[in-house]
Amino acid sequence: TPEGQARLMEINKAALAGKYEGVMLKDPEAPYECKRSLNWMKMKPFIEESLTVLDIEEGKPDSKFVGMMGAIVFGGEVDGKTVKVNCGSGYSIQQRAQIWADFTGKPVEWKKKKVKGKWQTIVEQPTGTQYIGMVGEVRADCLTKSQDSDTWSMRFPRFKCWRGFEAGEKL
Image (cartoon, rainbow, N blue to C red; front, side):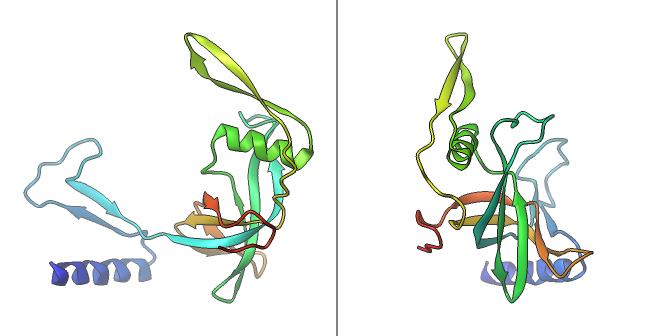
């Protein structure tokens, strides 16, 4: 009901104000299941912000993303706060390879899942796309304050999509 939804939002707001991540929703008649189910659900809010690409970082040497993009450094202003965040989640392997090829100007090889029992090697060629200055949409749980500076970051950031195709462009 609309009243129930309003009450749920009120409870969730109180939980967030108390520094909790959100609330758990449970069907009071349902038995506990030791797996994901519709009987127990977590309700956590998220934010989505349009931020500018400041830099692109290679994957760490001990990761599967070595030789391709590991994270994009996004930055901007959100609600009067200076935000800078390394976003290394939400990209496909192909996107990582293509972004790194464009950033470095060199072809990047990556392996595609097995087709008829064999791995396929794909090569992404540089297209000339300049990512620095582009605007991307980043989804996260919330803004978090850095302990050693006036900069803010984002908790559990994940890339959602590009906002435009030209540097600084917003759609």
